[in-house]
Length: 462
Ligand code: UD1
Ligand code: CA
Figure 1: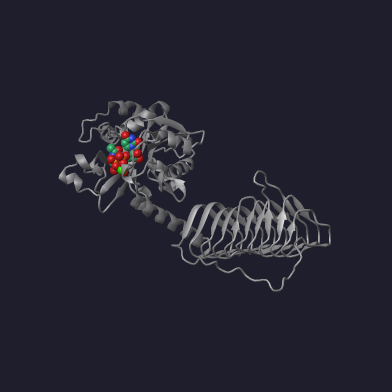
Figure 2: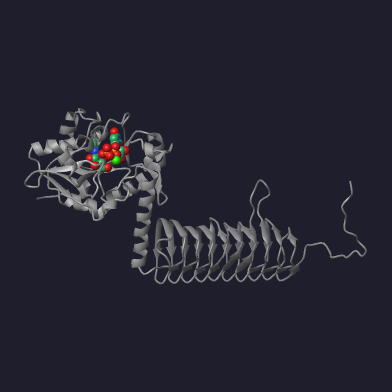
C-alpha cells in the first residue's frame, strides 16, 4: 500500500464559511482568537507543517474580513455565497483541486488538531483510498455517526438528524477531517443531493458513495479528543484556550523551565528558554520571546517580542514590548519598556520608569519614576529619580544623548535635542536646554530665597 507521505501531492481545503451564530458576535467565527491568534490562523499553521501543494480556504460569512486579516499571499480563497452544507462548501474549492492529488479537509473552527495526528491519517491511507478521522465519544450527541458493517468496514456517515435509534447509539463519530483523492471529489461532489432533513449538501454522503464502489475507507483517531473539538460558542473557546495553555506550559516544564504554577501562564506565540529559567505566576508572553539561562521573571509581567539574555531578573508587574535586554539586567517592579529599546549588560530600570526607543549602556541605572524616550545613554550613567527626557515639542520628536559616566540629579528635565557630555553632572531640579561640557556641573534652576513674615492665604468669608 503506497501512501502520500510525500506531502507535496496534498491539497488542503479549510472550511470557514459558517456563520458562528452562537458566538454572539459580529466577528466571523474563525477570526475569534485563541492564544492571541485567530482560530483559522492555528489551522493554517498546522496545515503548512504538511507542506501541501496548495491551501484553499472556503469563506462566506464575513469573508472579506477573514481575507483581510489572514493576508498570506499563497492562500487560495473560494467563496461560498450561501451556506448550503459542507459538501457544497468543498464544491466551491473544486476548481482549484488538481486531479491525481489528494485533499485533506480541515475545519477553520477546529484549531487544535496536531500535525502528528494528520500525518497519521495520511499514513494509513493507501492510493485511491479515502480516510476519516473519527473519535470515540462517551456522548456523541450532535455529531455524524460512523456506520460500519460486520467486518468493521466503514459504510456510511449518518448525521444526528438522520440517524435511526440504533445508529444514535454509536459512539464513534465523524470529526469532519477527511482525506479524499481529488478525482473522486470531482466525480462525487456534483452528485450530492440535499434531500435530507437539513436540506443541505452533506460532504459526509460521499463516504456512502465510496463504500458502494468498494473503495476502502481507512480511519484513525487523534491522541486526545480535544484535538478535534470545534468552537461553536465562547464556552468552548475558553475551554480550548485552557487546554492549549496547559499544553504549552507542559512543554516548558518538560524543557526544564520552572513555572511556579503551570495553570497561571499564558503564551500567545512562542517562548524559547535556555536552562534554569524561572517564571512566577500570571505572566503573559506574546509574539516571539526568548529567555536566556538563569532569567527570572516575577509575577504579573507581560513580555511581547522580547529577547532577554542570561541572568537578567525582571521583577513583578513589568510590561516589556519589542525590546532587547542584555544579560544581568534588573528591571522593575512596575517598569514599562516600550518598542525600540535595548538595554546593555547590567543596566537597571526601576519602578515607574518608562523607556521608549532608547539605548541604555553598560551598567547604567534609572531606578525611579522617569521617562526616557528617544535617548542614547552611555555606560555607568546614573539617572536620578523623576528625570524626564522632553523629547516631543507637540509636533516632532528629538533625541537626547547622555554620554558615559554622567550623573543626572533628580527631577531634571532634558529638553531634546540635547547632549550631556562625558562625566558631567546635572544638579537636581534642573531644566537643561543646552548641551553640557565634559566633566562640568550644570545647574539650571532659580536661586533659593526665603521671605520672612510671609503669610499663607486664608479663606475669604462670604
Ligand atoms: C459536520 C459533519 C458531521 C461531523 C461534524 C463535526 C457534515 C454534513 N456533517 O456537522 O458529520 O460530526 O461536522 O463537527 O459534514 N461550513 C461551511 N459551509 C457550509 C456548512 C459548513 O463552510 O455550508 C463549515 C463550518 O463553518 C464549519 C464546518 O464547515 O467550520 C462544519 O460545519 P457545521 O455546520 O458545524 O457541521 P455540523 O452540522 O456540525
Ligand atoms: Ca459543528
